[in-house]
Length: 231
Image (cartoon, rainbow, N blue to C red; front, side, top):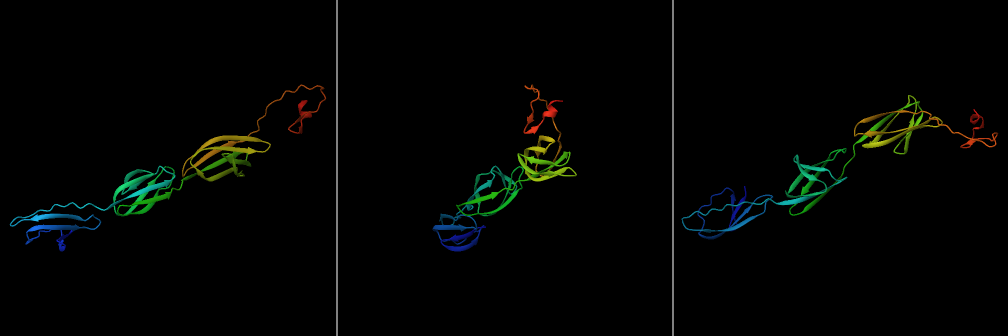
């Protein structure tokens, strides 16, 4: 559906059968929206029909797509274009909707306009999907740390839920002063709650002391253990 110009004069749109064209060498110009102009010359002979077979090339540009973090799969019209960072070439000019997908992250939708013979840069931050850990302690009152950072106390009824954790393996520790410490690992998954049961117990060991003189007083970590050491 291109517009036809013969020797600069508009003759309507294709397909078009031009009659009573003066013989000789004639200039043909075809124009179509979002396509490169098509120009040619044709020799018109007496009592003969000259044929013009034209293929108009669409105007194209490119998109340079980047995401943070990288490695996101890029879709245009439900077709995968590859993973970021990437450059998508030979796209017809116009408006496009891109969808970026990355594991454990929300999908991102980005609008972009492709311009003729230009590369449009597209950049977006991907929001991480987060999970939770539900910690039950026995007895209650344990201080909970995740990856070495204190996050709260599991008070009565002896549980603590920690939200907003990135997916992955986390080191959990529950400790009660004067009682003991429990530690373990848990796998946090996006949009899920991982449950941990921490039994905090006092673990004892033994220390054999040989005293000279026998009446010497015993202190451990600054605490007087003389009477207990004698038992």
